[in-house]
Length: 326
Image (tube, rainbow, N blue to C red; front, side, top):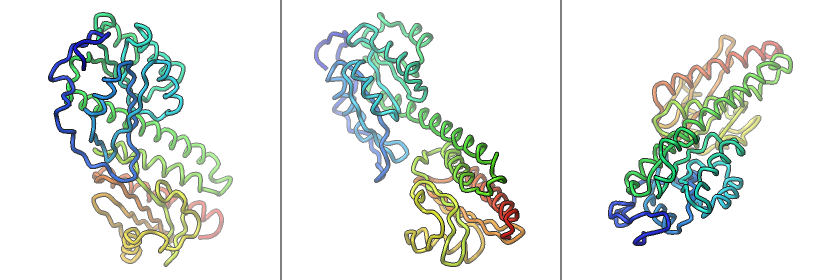
């Protein structure tokens, strides 16, 4: 930074040291980056933050930096990007409390409770920490002089983990509501495609929460195997567009190999980051669930997948019995 600035921030050799090497991290191809919005009227703050977080990675996802140089500009960016995960927000910009007013706008007007807001100030006396924390819905409060490169990394990392948990909870809630809605009419319509889709959404959200790593790009497929053809009942992620009867060779070679194994040996097959679960009902109805992710499944994940397959197979069998097709 310069020798001084209008916010009274005094440079320090430990503050976001640009000479340090960027944090190492492998960004997975096709993984959407986390959106981080920097709101500050000083260009140097944007530049230093970008450099300090260069190479940041969480769950195979890097960062997409968005910039706003005033609270008014930040409102426009927020409208265009409702999926922003973290905001690094200055307090004093076009007015002494522009940042604080923006917090109210985000939480009340936009009704955005998910985004994590880290307030950064160069004039702590003007906006006392205790007052800000108790009166404003923020998630962290930092003085600019205390934000070393390592502390900035830790702040962003923990904020993103928190955002990821909240996002998964919200996805799980939506999936659960979809299941409840579908269940109310499932036996009237005898059409459980919506039911499968909702439960599948719920499962992937739950897997995300029960894992140490982020399973954002998790993919899942529910299928009834019939030799070389699969009757797809629901899909999400990379299998979202698979519907109805699909040839087995429509999938990539790795997926085909895993599914063939389960069909041949009539038992589940799993690896560190995939699970092909097999279940057969008393009437002989076979159910197959394929789940893959970038990260390693835990034991609770596997147990949940098995329970899911069993319950979906039983629900499918019940409807099939009502239709007289079993």
